[in-house]
Length: 100
Image (cartoon, rainbow, N blue to C red):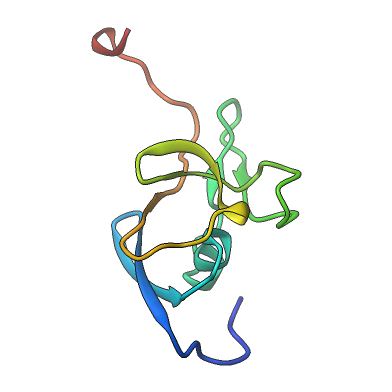
């Protein structure tokens, strides 16, 4: 669905849900997710409704992902870096007795 108008001259490697993805140097994480075909990027915690990149400018918070182990990061406002790991969301978290 999404594609670049031209191929980047400089690219970096990021890892999206464990998959190696080459993106243009300077791309936002949301651009990397879209170009890699990662839609939806998360699911809501109550109904597991799919969410994707919506506003692209940090207003809607639909693009929340975990970046390098830090949760609830806005993909549209974060620049991709070499070796970055991105984990998309999967709905409600399950808590066990060990995590309480």
